[in-house]
Length: 397
Image 1 (cartoon, rainbow, N blue to C red):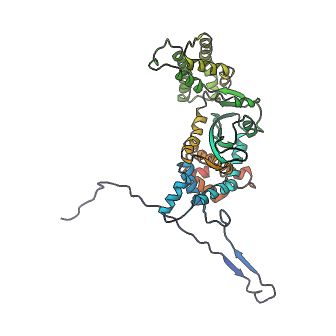
Image 2 (image 1 turned 120 degrees about the vertical axis):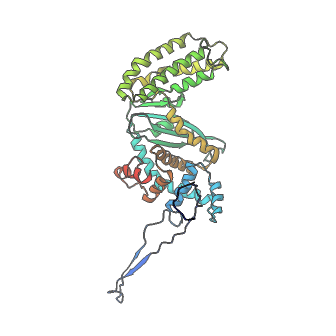
Image 3 (image 1 turned 90 degrees about the horizontal axis):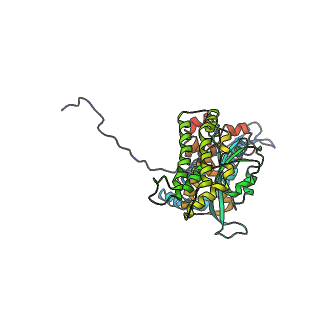
């Protein structure tokens, strides 16, 4: 038999195991041939690019991989240590932690500060917070709760910015300190935590998703379709608002158009909701009482979002952004020191920003460590390293 043609009959994906390479950099020393026999011979040594950390063998690619594993895939350092042993490379978790903290403060903190400055120029912000545990904090027990905050820009049609911040307490003063320098009159979407009341200069918006959630929890089991139940009635009002918002996005309305449509469509719904609220009798339903108390406490903020089409109806974007902290917390369990917690906030910021702009997480981390942002850079130079930059988009897509 003679071959008369070929065809593809199947395909398979082959796994190629990763490897670590040791690269040695050679410095060349140059001597001046004309003065070598004089009393002052001249020499020049080319030392090349300095190490990422002085005296350390960590490279941008290795640190980017470790950071991607921890903050992109939530794999703690002790598990990574075991994985490196499979590659016959004994890299300890202590070394990795040191690299993460030192390089975070040296190279990522300046980038973070640039993002912070850009965030303070914006007029529509959102925020959420969640507990974390730090074992070694001055004057505090290891079991004491510390906090991670997410502060992000809202739906203002500009480049999204997402920042994480670590603080030892949940005090409202932390928020004031973080947003120091922002011009008064900005819109601020949050949940019902009273600490946010410290921002007197903000136009606070109430999250309608939280309102709906409290009402949903108040519906007795099996009565979800009982429209005579007060909690079900309250949920229907909320659903109507979200329905309108969904149609606006589907029609791709501008924020000016959204503002007009909200006043026409949603304002009457809210007025009906508030009339319903005055008349509703929770009876023995404790959860409905709780829902009504929550709504009454934040009633003055329920209609703030109607003032501008760029305001959000809910705080869902912040709640989605805080989720990486809660997932990471289940895997990392705790931070050993406050410095480690601060470093976590830096890396989470970079990783979540990369996700937002659809970048390859590892490639963007490596890009930053290769370009080494520093405090002496101008904002124009930081702009060239930002995830929305066209060159960065092309390199790290």
